[in-house]
Length: 91
Image 1 (cartoon, helix red, strand yellow):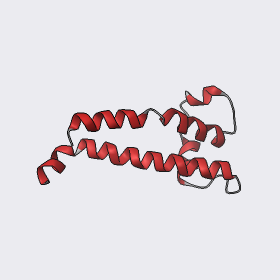
Image 2: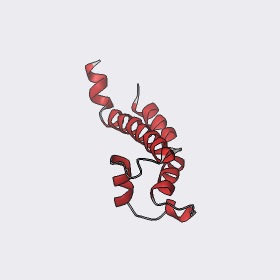
Image 3: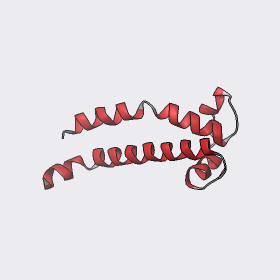
Image 4: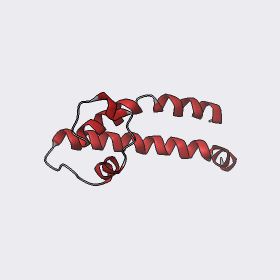
């Protein structure tokens, strides 16, 4: 796979990030205000991503798990993009 194709895949995969992050942040910060998507507050969001802030909230757990899976695949694509030349030289 070429680096250009992987960059396009990475860009396309990044498009729904605003939806997943916005949905997750609204649950974590307990707000429906659209401005939460542009505010630079990260600490509670990171705690919500890696810990279990609201164990009885099924929407939070479902959103957190979806966001985790999305970010994991994004990370795999990004690492693949960074090391595509080494991967191609092995194959």
